Length: 254
Image (cartoon, rainbow, N blue to C red; front, side, top):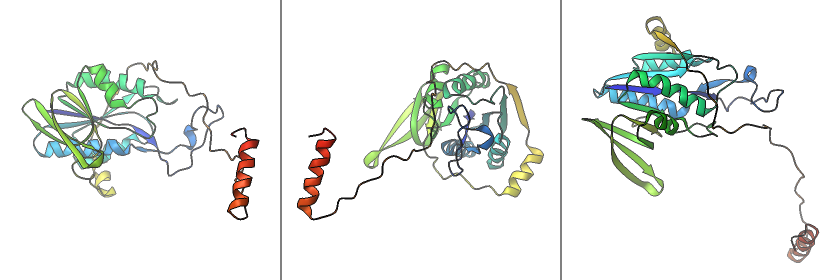
């Protein structure tokens, strides 16, 4: 079985986010990227399936700064193929364009199962997984926390609020949005990653032309702005109530 995991890098929210001069995007020169947390769970779930005899794991990512480390780390965990899609990624790309690029390439791999992170903190224009499934004409199940593969089906487990758990069978090929792998993503020592860099091969393929249609246009980004400060009301309950009524009248609420 061919398992494919498309991944993306997202801004590291631990670092300060700087808006560029246009005011409509983050400054790429001041931006630190890291692997999307849910994509890390998708990689782990794919490797767990491989270890149970499901097949080969291929990790696919856009060729942007920092992606080599993410791919080599995936190989150190057990991924078999590492693929970078080269293209004009310098100005960033929305999820609609990214899903089209992934679909165009992943289709050539003929996967039986595609695992993606269920979402990312910059998925303001829709998560990649459902769009990828639509382009490939495959069924999609999101918020998955467990997968068992048998015959030509995958039995997936979904968790709902209130402790409810659902299990459903999905006919393959299919796309799954992974919320949590069956086990936490394994830790890989830096020494093992560096050793993997000497043996693992990064394959590169040209990405399809970016088509940004369908995504919203960002007009402005801004840091939280300081507004008027709160007014503290002193006095007993009657005095505070009287002043509140006056404020409501001044604001036209009463």
